[in-house]
Structure formats: structure tokens, C-alpha cells
Length: 183
Length: 59
Image 1 (cartoon, helix red, strand yellow):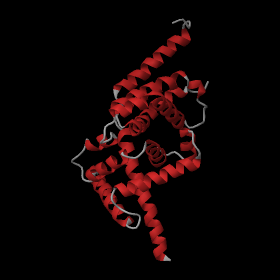
Image 2: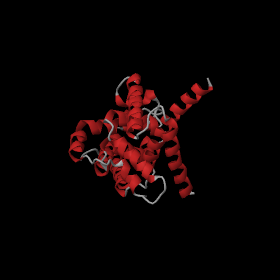
Image 3: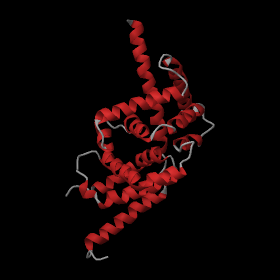
Image 4: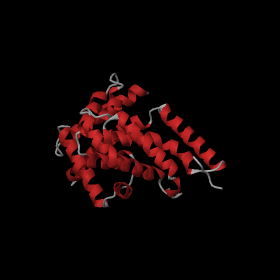
């Protein structure tokens, strides 16, 4: 008998929360959504094909949960700062956090289709193909959302493509400073 | 030539830095300790399904 894939669920909850927050921009709503998605996943585990990407399967369930009924509610309670920035704001004393907070605020203003594509591809480790399947769109659509999202962020962060060194230097400095404060 | 290559690399490094920022924000949340509601939920689901498979299926 093979091991129960349900035992693997726990390892995906952290990333599911991060993805949910990037969709909802609201921490408590995100956790409600994750809880609902986990119950669905648990009771429909037979629809998961062993050997395929469980995280992609779970993110699809989570995403459907969001679009089916949490999306409307999240608009009503949407917080302008964005909640990805909440996790950053928890450690305001760390060097480099201000840069990160600015970034998170900029990120939160992106349209949800671009946030979603950027998070899946840029942070979730999804290939363009997996992201496309998760979102139910063509690969080219995901690529274009990622590119538009990145371009918009560059614009919002106050740099142009002609001055890439500036943002690179500033952001890298922030990351290096943060690594040093952790070490 | 060199100039153009540098430009290309710099532009793609902006994309890299953006991805790094997103990844960092994502990982900050993903690596947080799980709230107990989730571990409790899994325990509850596990208990329910083992009861379900051993006993009859009436609810």
C-alpha cells in the first residue's frame, strides 16, 4: 500500500498561506481560505494524481476557493497597505526593511492577475506552464502578466529600465543588509 | 557590444531583483510557524476519516 498523499498536505500549508495572502491582501481572510481549501483537498484526495505536483493542485483549489466566493468579500475589506507588507512590518528594526516595505506596498497595488502570476512564477517556483495550468490560461498570458507586473513595479519603485543599476543597487543593498543582520 | 551586453544583463537583473523581493515576502509568510488552527484541523480530519473507514458510513 502506498503512503497516503494526505500526509503531505501539512508541508504545503505555509506556501498556501503566502499565496492566499497575495490574492486577498488580508491575513485572516487568507487563513479562512486556506482552511477551506485544505478541507476540500482532504475530502477530494482521490482526484490528486500521485506523482504530479501537489502544490500546483492545492494552489488550484485555493484559487478556485478565492474566485468562487471570497473575492467579493476581500474587495470589501481590502487593506490598502497589503498584507504581504504586514509580515515585513513585523521586523521594522532590521536594516533593509524599509526598502522591502516600499516594495510590498507597490506590489499590493498591482492588478490581481499580475500579482498572482508574479507570485506563482517569481516566488512559488512554478514553471510558466504550471502557472498557466493553475490559472487556467495560456502560457503566453502568464508570461505577459509577469512582464507587465515587473514593468509596473519598476515604474512604481521610481526607476526606469534605462537606470537598472539604481534599483539593483538599492534593493541588493537592502537584501545584503538584511542577511547581515540575520547572521 | 560590451555595452549592449551589460545593458541586457542589467535589465534582466532588475527582473531578478523583483523576483527576489517577491520571493522574500512570500517566504516570510510561508516559513512562519503554522497557526495551531491548521495542525488542529488536520488532526480533526485524520480522526474523522479513520473513524469513517473503520466503522459504518452513517453520519
